[in-house]
Length: 416
Picture (cartoon, one colour):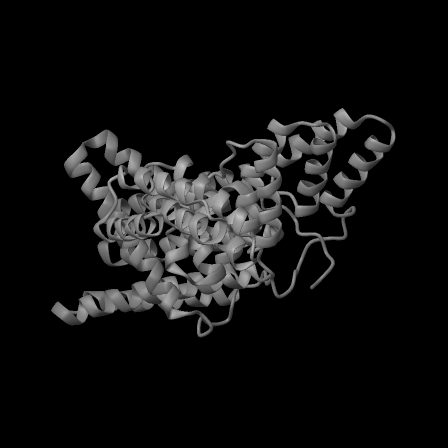
């Protein structure tokens, strides 16, 4: 990988706007615009070409997104490298989002409809970026993934959402004006070209966002093109400054500076670790627990379960009522602890999921698993029974209820 520093996207906005006019992207726009005339063929044939052209647009757009995310700032020459599965997955997600918006307008009114539209507008880049990075639709549609992407990128993510909205409004206004002043045939071609320009520019912007924040997102680009030799890495500069402040006896200022950076942008694990060490040395248990909620989400998104478990253990010691941001975080950590032979921590984390997220169906499974480990590994039959009875009061599914009753019967037979 190049050792060049990546230029922030806000300093490249003119280049991003011109990106679709460069060779590979421009040729694709010309070809797809010309082929768009095929949609006027009669009946099924015309509909078939509409579908083919729609897939072709997003196939190349996804190739732009991935190409840029991997550090290549020139448009791809062709889209043969794109994964059709990812394209179909994204089209499926968009169709589902459109259906949800329509459903909200029809059944819940205008306010709810616009609310759902706004929410989907905000999360759409996170869905596209997640699909581009790992190709998993299930992962891309997971609210935990959206939260992780937004939390790690921070304010710049919302800035990109606003820019995407500006791109869409600009394209819509241009298309409306063209349709008003030009004949239908000519306006259709120009409108298609404008829409493709907007599509390719926005996907280049999303890809660049992945590239700029690849470390925080846990993504490893092929290379880093462009940019100039700038001062040392921002996180390392921050670490050096904070360390110097501590050595000078000004730990409070070091903690405040680290806290400000962590809240304002995505930072490396090393910055988080230094912040936690300083909080621990200061005896700030509330600060450790509050930071642990955010840090665990980042670590799990990076698949660093070992460090996430250490942070969870430390946070639980600091605050017995600690719980992570999501029930999924607690259950995933519990499973990781079980695999590593840390049954006591696994029980504790499953109890956190059960007690901390009472409305989550997965919390009942966590309670059942905690009760099982309590009884099998720790000999805590009384606690296991109490937990199972509490789970039964939660309105479990038939399968969950069957497991609860079977475990209670087993405990009764052992106790008898």
